[in-house]
Length: 402
Image (cartoon, rainbow, N blue to C red; front, top):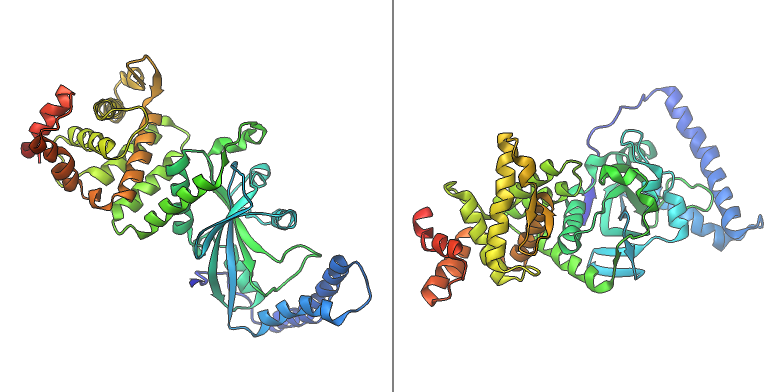
């Protein structure tokens, strides 16, 4: 069970005027909201006790329950889904937001984040985290609490989006976090759902530049969603801090406006996963280790030797950026043997996705030395050398490099 608790809030004046205002709201506003909701839902002014009870009881629960349960909804931007709902684990799901929920969330936002309204609405499904609760407070304290980004499980949410990016490589994000009460309410607005929350700008800036007119929004099916769920579970269960840090760098890669920032984030993520205490010949070691992982887990249309050379080229561009070299522009694209031009920053992100995916599925290789021992030095002992002469040479000299 997850918990939310207040961090810091503006203190309320506990004088007579404030208490009188509380009494007036309790006496006049609450009954008014319940009656208004009753009329909107049942389309009648005739009093039916069983029908009114369904509106009254959530208010009663809010007044008397010590803990208030709820679900957290995080609308997923600019992705389509070919299903209404899929359960990822016992407290995580992807669900389609119905029309009433969409209307209800339209007014939830924050004055500080500057989230574009059209971006905010560009979601059909949400990540749903269940099993959460909050200690019952008065209405004003709860309203402040739900408006504070710091009280939400951002780390869990970001891990899900990292998993989504690892599996799909699609550009997405979120702009809102929503609380959906479970059997309680402290206010009503007509027939809308009594939800709460806030907005947050966790998406690329260019989403706000007419991206909602894009006709080619990617679509996820159930098979892909299940793969995302497995990677998400792997991220949650990974004990190594390096996996968590690399996933955060991957998320940053998808939010950056500048490709130089992107390649720095991507290479930092790779180094977090595959470097060791000895910084000597780091580029060579990373290239060898990622090349070795490509033999363990297939990298699309790339041989281990090609992977090895790509990493060398990526780091050549990175090095030129860090040094402020005027030659950096000449290194920003990697040209394949078939004369295909790919930005080094994009390729670096793909290799970070690949490496995270491989290491989440193969936990023992999160220790870079195991890659050396099993996949590199093991090849020499078994006589399974790669045909790439440069990679062969570096493998044979690995013991001295270590």
